[in-house]
Length: 298
Image (cartoon, rainbow, N blue to C red; front, side, top):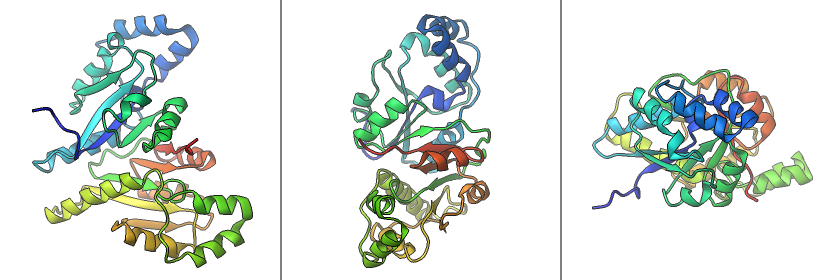
């Protein structure tokens, strides 16, 4: 019987997001593919250091040890060829990561293969690959280099921005076009009408399902904790609360920042990853926590 990914949260991740390949990336940019190929083959037995998304992946895979039913699958999605990938697999084995699947496209675009692997979240440093994933309707984020690594805690902690991430960009567009007063008036008028789903809504609902399972299993320490860190404030808070109720989703911690910088709150929450749609917010957040930017669909 074929292995099914139907009921799993599938994370597609680039090798550069999982491991620290910045030196190798610079080598590729400066000296080309052949220099990169020779370097990787010559260093096949040299274990790579963890990358920005390593702690998140490790914590997500830990979920599979808590129940008999598998919940998470991680797939390496890389433009590398199989010839240059042995170092990646040797490093995966060294760290004991339960990753056995990969899509190695030898320079070809990754987007056509994301749906083939039923990817629910794609993480990469490559702007083009992330944008193509978003255009295909897949939750995806471009990662930022971060001086701060996520905690090695096995409890997964994920923080989300609201508009254009969890929710549609409908309200954000009103704010950008007509200003704060028009935005607040619109949100008051629609307070009881749930917001449309954004690109990460499905991911949040999947995580909420995992949380409910842990509660049914009476686990003393929940394996997952989520936070909403949004620039919204009163009176625009009410619609958010009604939306989450309509989705049957409980977010553990919610912060209505009202325009205050998010970095201090994020540093206190210590997420494995924070997702936002605006470069300025992501750039600032990446100084304190691992961060991914969610592009707008084009």
